Length: 609
Image (tube, rainbow, N blue to C red; front, side, top):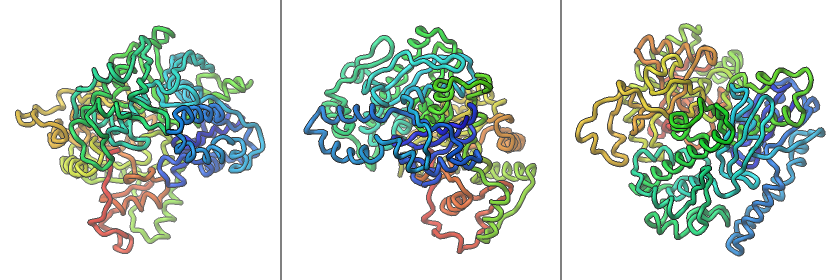
């Protein structure tokens, strides 16, 4: 049975192809449209999935959409009509989009893909739960969906057993930790899908001055971790406006605009919101544990991207372990809704694989790939100088370059579907490099990248460098460095405040160490990615360090590179020193001047996020 799962018209549209319960392909529309977080109908992503599965659209047995549009539209209309006339302007601006495409999903699917067969719909949290539980390593587990808003629900929890999931309870819109964080992120001057992540990244610079005010004025916390938000402070009507005038009075005046300087107030707000968010998630998890009695937990929804909260849940939560899928966001719902349909709506047809193998993602690498022939053809056609290296020599050469503090673009195999790089499309560097650390600090003063670089570490050496006793395969945990890896700070260094903390070298791995001595890490096993594991192993043998910098292969404001054309363009637009595509090594110094369209002073900087 061939099922296409589609997520669209919220954030990060995506498509997955599942055959007999096994994920064959999954892709984000932004990879093809080159529009970051593209919410539009994912036609190109769908065509890729069909091509990868060697199918025509006529071979698809069912198409599944990740939410119920009419229910979501009813919430939208009620939310915007309630504060009339305040919400009418937003209603007028958004209604054409709903009338044109968001409600008439069946027509869009038939029009864009030429599909004439069966079309089904799941609830949004059913899709999130399916994407969290079915690919997990557990036969039974609880799930907790931490989201902003779906049809009428903001968060949910339940249980998964075998090939079934059951939603036990939903928290109604808008009363959720996700929307609470949204209002603080907006007030602190952050916009877009990454706003929550930026707020969490800013938190370690601040003090928790506003925790009591949040509890007393903004939210009423229930024993199960659910909350009631004060509508006088947080207004989610009239276009999800967020902070009200009373909110501003409580927290020191007008909100920060995106290009304004970050102040201590903004840092303190971020810290306070992060602490409250972590406490709410812990309380919700404990309630889910008591209600379900399950030993394991799976997480879904955009709030599952909060690496700091995830790590605290593992450290302090009641569960034996917590599993988070590589794409807990709405893009992951393309996988989730297809898996839900396969197991629930078609009841795992006779002859299908057993439940423990049907839904397991073979890996996070489900996107497009380009073989040696395609890469070499492009390089020859464009007359781009390159050197071909055997695999062993490639790993040794790149390890040597990293040890010499060079930055390397890494383009290998199928793209990773997850939110973060996992060894297929990344920019690599030496975490001990103070040059990279200084460059990041300089850039931070001009942008919102106040986080250090993320890191990849050999799974077998995780406990040697970090306070973690398990793997973190999807870069969704922020954990403390082992104490023996930290520097003893001087008197003046300890006194650093706010963004001044960035200038303090805290460990022997300064490029990945945050100001609270934590790092966002991605563990690499030989089974998951032999080539990438081999590279880091060679770097370890050369330097004694089994850790390398690993950040998305892109420049600010653009999606991760997908093709050799995009990889080379990004390489030439930044100050990367080398590019590896398949077995081919490109040296920036050997590229003819005519291939470089930008002068040195106009190079775009590598970003931490």
